[in-house]
Image 1 (cartoon, rainbow, N blue to C red):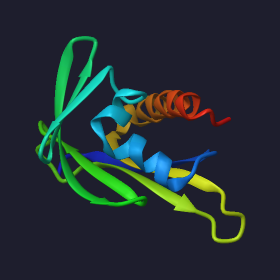
Image 2 (image 1 turned 90 degrees about the horizontal axis):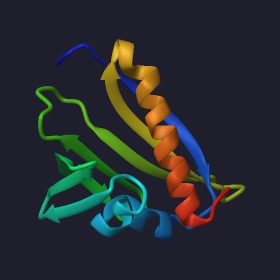
Image 3 (image 1 turned 180 degrees about the vertical axis):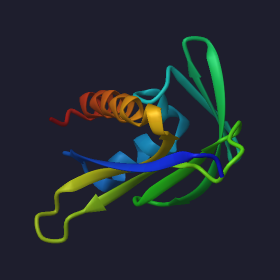
Length: 127
């Protein structure tokens, strides 16, 4: 395991868990907000940004709950996970992100997620 630090951030999303899950788990959904283009072959997803391509393996998923990926170039146990949490009382839907970054890149990674999730909210028509 390298010296990557695990971090978690939460975003309130005005969406049904079922709709949100489609944007987290399918290549077409991820292409709408996470990357310029996304393709998949089985468990391997190709994320394309500005002409460069990154491969990630789908490690785990549960319908309407979460997806967990690991970047192919990782030489450690790090992953990124997008989990949908529904408050039992208010029924508010939150997107809970778990990711890993080098200590000096943690804030930058959080900002990147904030920008990505802002795009997701726009696609969903959420505030």
